[in-house]
Image 1 (cartoon, one colour):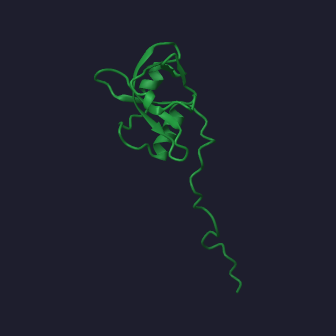
Image 2 (spheres, helix red, strand yellow):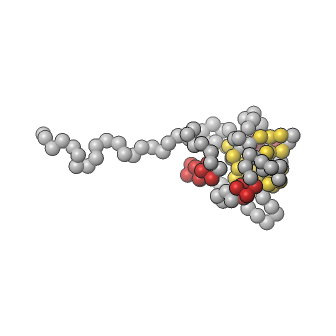
Image 3 (cartoon, rainbow, N blue to C red):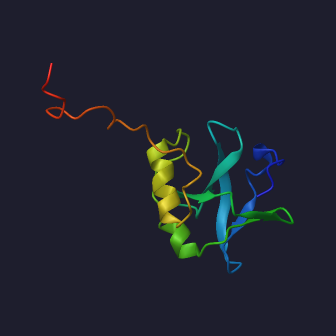
Length: 125
């Protein structure tokens, strides 16, 4: 998606799935903690339903509407983390997996399995 778009300008815009079916209206935009780039949009999927998180990359803004390259059913089945709160790295990972997106660009968690294993040190002194 275009990264020069002010995320506040996305709120209130309509969103459509890969087939052109309306998903709903963008409620909130979530920025990447490290880069500040808009990364996720929370889309209100109906009057009494919840918000569904969709990735802004590889979505496109076309003529003032967001076009998400996934089926509406997949979007509606996305994990529900509620809106208005920060997405944790684990929640983002769940969303990436849900949409089948490559997470190689996401830094791996710290490696805690370093150094010698207990009982394997040289017994010689």
